[in-house]
Length: 311
Ligand SMILES: *[C@@H]1O[C@H](CO)[C@@H](O)[C@H](O)[C@H]1NC(C)=O
Ligand SMILES: *[C@@H]1O[C@H](CO)[C@@H](O)[C@H](O)[C@H]1NC(C)=O
Ligand SMILES: *[C@@H]1O[C@H](CO)[C@@H](O)[C@H](O)[C@H]1NC(C)=O
Image (cartoon, rainbow, N blue to C red; front, side):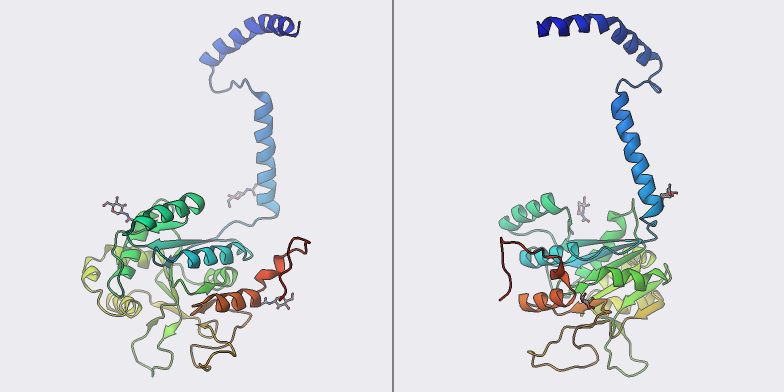
């Protein structure tokens, strides 16, 4: 009975459907057979544009933060993902944190890094072999301008995997800086006398896109990669007269220190402070834990009968 009814209504509709089909062949542009769906997407558009208008100011700053690390640092990447995912997002800025590793050399890395890429899509595999102080910085800066040529960033940063940036603080400090010829970080060595050649410490430094493009395009640098790589990077910029807008963020960028450590305060190391841009030397889980707690990352934990986390 029901089937009959369906069939008869289909037969009744058939001429109209045919007419509609023929019409759509001649006027494909303004024809839609799915008015309800079209309404749905209109609703979405309206919502999106009102959010755009009222709540989300336009993005005026885009930064690529490349964490240069090694394939086997699985736990560190997991921690960094958590730490950055739980930070309040910076306002009016996009800061993409991506992990850069050299070519994968072991069977397990080929599989496990593939899984990370499927799940998170935040790993870039450079064409380099893993080594210390032998050109990885060059591989990074010379690859980035080509890899992201379709959507260039304002700034490109190279970051240690034991550094923790506070993205909102970083965005605020970069927002009013020049978008060209910029070299931002922690000027080292901080105890050097005036006139000594200085460079931005490897904890993390940022250059404007034009500087990264210059590194990529300057063939001679490829042969000048010997030495501590961040010092080498500073040497390149000096020799090419690049990165003249230098901004050192001393006291807001520093090595981690707490009361349990034997080291003391010096010009690059002190206790955690609220207006931090980056903390460096987070070499173990306890240092990460204390740092993330200090910056209130645990405040999002809701009370529940399912867990208790107090010691
Ligand atoms: C939404 O944002 C875009 C990009 O910033 C801007 O060009 C556009 O005018 C905005 N639309 C509305 C309705 O505010
Ligand atoms: C690595 O080299 C291959 C082959 O030359 C190239 O297709 C690929 O884009 C390179 N990858 C990166 C990250 O530079
Ligand atoms: C963490 O939260 C407390 C309480 O809301 C606040 O007083 C403190 O300033 C926050 N710490 C940082 C580093 O923002």
